[in-house]
Length: 155
Image 1 (cartoon, rainbow, N blue to C red):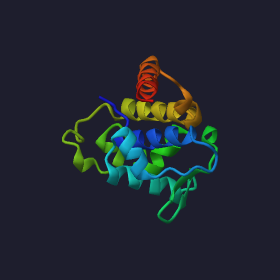
Image 2 (cartoon, one colour):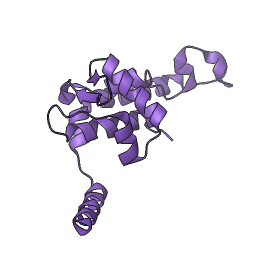
Image 3 (cartoon, rainbow, N blue to C red):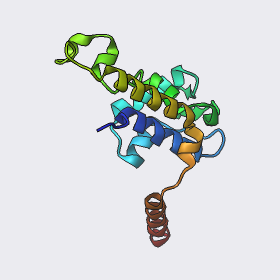
């Protein structure tokens, strides 16, 4: 089954979280990990990659963290994927190393697989991160309502 890489999920979680913060308010990797229960090392590494590529700005120090500095409506899912995990490749033979495929000598589906891979890339090029992280699914709305209810009950 084709799945989005977990590191891309961590990037989307972080970007969505940061997009709801007040302008200038920093977000640390620890904050994201604590709230969303993501593992620290890969989450931190994803934030570093986003910072190194001009999507986030890193502020050093005890009260440091990250800010979004790129317009997320101009960043595609494909670009994000390229930064974090490399090119989208749905089959081993796309690496150019046919030795990783046991049936490379007799394979007759390379052309359709290449076509499928290209179509996936086209779709990923049209999905903008800004749009993606603003979408609210019914399940997410229920989770948010439950959190708000718990907050109001604890006050």
